Image (cartoon, rainbow, N blue to C red; front, side, top):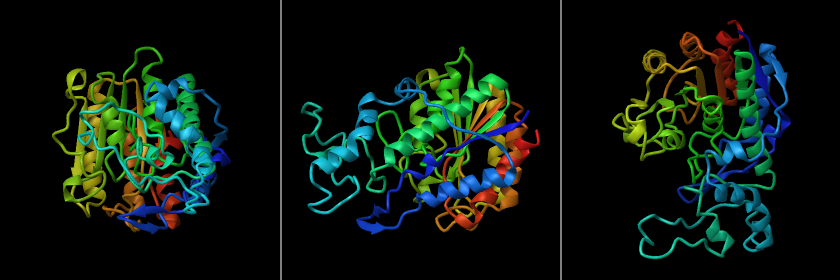
Amino acid sequence: MSLTAVWSDDALAHDPEGEVWIGLPIDGDEIPKRGSVIKDAIDQMGLEMIEPQEHGDAPITAVHDLGMLAYLESAYAEWVAAGYTVDPGQDRVVAYAFRHPGAFRHVANRLPTSRSAMAGVYCMDTCTVLGPNSYRGIRYAVDASLTAADLVLSTGDHAYAGVRPPGHHAGTDYFGGSCYLNNAAIAANYLASSGGVRVGIVDIDAHHGNGSQQIFYERDDVVYTSVHVDPGEGWFPHWSGFADETGIGNGKGHNHNFPLAPGSGDDEVARAVARAAEIVVDFGVEYLAVSLGVDSGANDENSPFSVTTEGFGHVGDLLLAVGLPTLLVQEGGYSLPDLAADISAVLRPFSRA
């Protein structure tokens, strides 16, 4: 088997220029420079690299609400048309009001006419903002992930989608956590729909993929496993990622969370990834999809863990040992001096396979 990368400069298009956290404007971590460093990792490994191909809306709307997709496409233009870039001078789409599910339970679920209120219909936080070129970057991330899935399907080899923005916090009809469309979930669903096959997801991002869990929580053709910091210790996404969340209906027993204590290092993470890999194998899947976050790195300022570059290499070995054609989709990782090395450490075993 070999490893091919999918990349385009469209990965640099999304520029939130900061975010709002607990009411304060901050620089944020999801910056275009991350894309350049992801490209550096691909170049340094000497991987064959191809451009993404457009796949249209159908693979997206098989996972996400059509209204949310339409909103993401039009949100910035409508924000400008509403005059908010002039008064009050906000040149990014950022939510200020959110429709809590219990607040309007006795009235019709109408969309607001105010574009500022519309910003809170699908978004779940104030940190996930939209700029003038964000939608181009968002669609790039989906198309790159689907192109990588095509490679896995057509060749039986491995493929890496070097994408930003990430995706695993985006659910069926909501987005947040710097994620807009769920790249890995869209690609995993695409694989599962390719002929009635089963797909296993191993999410190694430091934070629980609440969106991926929600999308597949009632399904029996995709098993979702996630190794992440314990949300009960105060970490995002706060409301999900606990060990007792195992799926419902047809999906009962097909969702497996491995919440770890803050400060966990190479050994603890490796043990959890090994268990996740065992579950995927026992499930009898034909393809493996990896949500490849490296924000558990020891030098990442926001990391809840202390995983070393060598530790990421061990994680790569464990994932390769599953022995399946594997799709790897980039998620988090924000320490720019370490990002290329940590990504490469996970990918290198697949490039030698």
